[in-house]
Length: 142
Image (cartoon, rainbow, N blue to C red; front, side, top):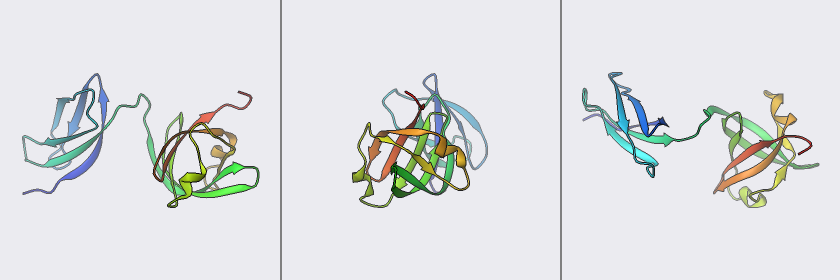
């Protein structure tokens, strides 16, 4: 019996294009609008995969590394970047640090030595799920 693998599948028009990680066989699978995860078994090699369904219009790029979040002028918080898209950033904070942030709160930017582009944007907290935080980019002067 083959072990279960995890993967992220992009949903387009109510379907996912599943590519078996074992035998590379492609198949198109219909998914319900309310599904967030789907268990898929390859009909060719019986490999089982747990698919996390990504319904975003823009692709998220996985990115990992340490950075600092500038909350106000002189207050910094250490964060661990998770993913980046053209609309925003997802990151995790140390346990309990997420309580310092609120949905809708405006942040000054991200201080990141290896990607200075982050410091050019103001951010607005979009989502807080435990220690995972999602923020969207905000234009200056808005």
